Image (cartoon, rainbow, N blue to C red; front, side, top):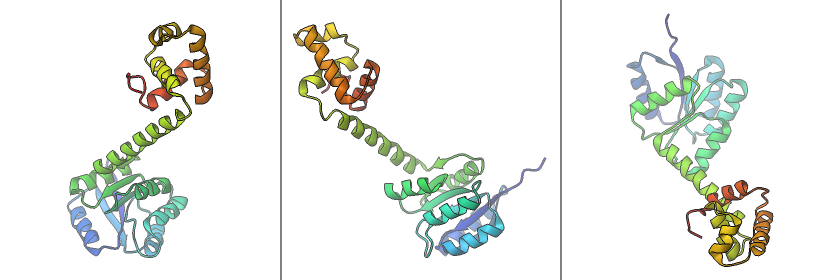
Amino acid sequence: MTTQPIRLFIADDHALFREGMRALLSATADIVCVGEAANGEDALRQIEESRPSVVLMDINMPGINGIEATRRILRTHPAAGIIMVTMLEEDASIFAAMRAGARGYVLKGANHQELLAAIRAVAEGQVLFGPTIAARVTQFFTHVAAGQGEESLAELTQREREILDLIARHYTNPEIAQQLGIGDKTIRNHVSNIFSKLQVATRAQAIEKARQAGLGNGGI
């Protein structure tokens, strides 16, 4: 049984990059270049005819940029795997590419093996980001989660934060009352206020929000 080679299209306005990719692919049996373009308009026209399985797409091309070209390609060829290959590693560019439907994002400084691995992975239906980009995506969502958690605690008083910290450490109400030296009824009132401010209905939900804000380890 013979496996069909991956049909690759290169859309990049830098001739040296396209030439380098062609040279690399000439020694790669399982990937064949079916076309190339230096701008978005030409890429759209050629891709309509060549029907590649994977497209290497530069973001900043003249005319129709890579983000818009990606959207248009996927409207008519949703199975195509688009990999952004660019010098840009700003969060805005990364997430614009993801929203447009790109399945990969690799920096132009990546080595040849990383590029080939990305092409093969995307051809198989995977989503792949280079190590540097993957780290930025992880960092972004970590900060977002932490920020959301802290924002949800903004209305709590210092005493309520102390109590929520103990709740997140799995203290019961009587144990919290003993720890803080206040009455059980006062603790129940505080817990009720905490639940109301956090908009949660259960202790487990309160603990989840507390952990998102960094509570539950003794630090408030």
